[in-house]
Amino acid sequence: ETGVTQTPRHLVMGMTNKKSLKCEQHLGHNAMYWYKQSAKKPLELMFVYSLEERVENNSVPSRFSPECPNSSHLFLHLHTLQPEDSALYLCASSQDLLAGGRYEQFFGPGTRLTVL
Amino acid sequence: SQQGEEDPQALSIQEGENATMNCSYKTSINNLQWYRQNSGRGLVHLILIRSNEREKHSGRLRVTLDTSKKSSSLLITASRAADTASYFCATDVRGSYIPTFGRGTSLIVHP
Image (cartoon, rainbow over all chains, first blue to last red; front, side):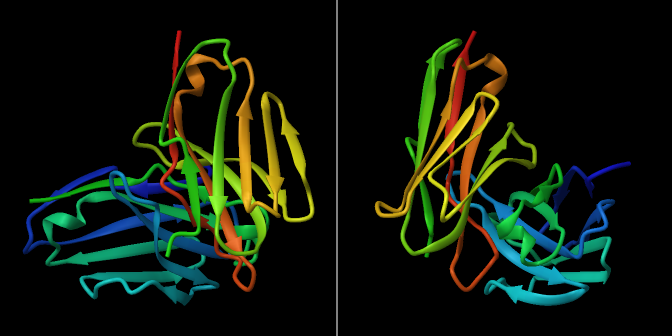
């Protein structure tokens, strides 16, 4: 498989559930990102990892917990979410942290999350 | 606060026509990028223009950048139905190389 993959593609969960989103990049990149995309809103940057270290946390509620065990994998652990957390969650990677703005980011297809 | 803002929010044209989308931003930038997103999918990078460049071309795409007006435009010439998508500009503010995205322009090209 090539590029950036995300699983699952769709997820429906109750507010008391715990679930995880997975992202994997096969590009040899060093930086990975989580974004939240809600209808009619700008793409919201949630977390940024560079060489497995978190470098940005954009005031995201603690019910979202990221994990980056290695430079190829990124997880988003979800716990006691709210209905307003329903959105498309996008993972992206770039060659390195500077390359995200200087060159390009590569995005996965996203996970469509619905919180009931 | 949001850095980039696309205009118009929605654009509907006939196949063969040109489509122009604009992006305005607030603070000085290093680079500006345009991305496309097909419905419910991830974003795909189209083109990057650096702050010292004024115009770039890629196939049917033409991007301009006016740093004095803090604005950029994306022109798609001879549009096709397959160009139907949302288009986003992303800017990285000086001092940070992490791009910030706008709300996007939704383009519909009717066959």
